[in-house]
Image (spheres, rainbow, N blue to C red):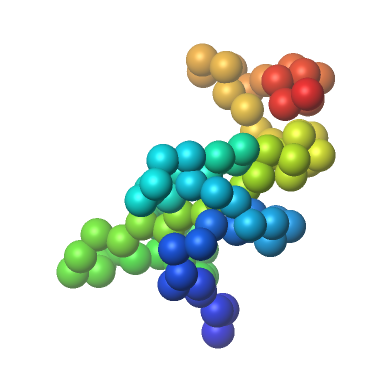
Length: 92
């Protein structure tokens, strides 16, 4: 069974670097992004469909990890999937 952190301290999901809150009392990291999912049909770990209360999974990823892994990001510009070159340029 996966272990989930219940602390308010933000850490990068990929590298575990501690992150500061951009605004105190929020989950918005400074020098990073937060990612939210209310469920995913394909997940065997997190799919709260049928839950009596809304559930939201939130993870943080530091800017360094985003930039270092730009080729693994699916960036949409409008309705168009950006090329890998466009994505790398965006995170450079």
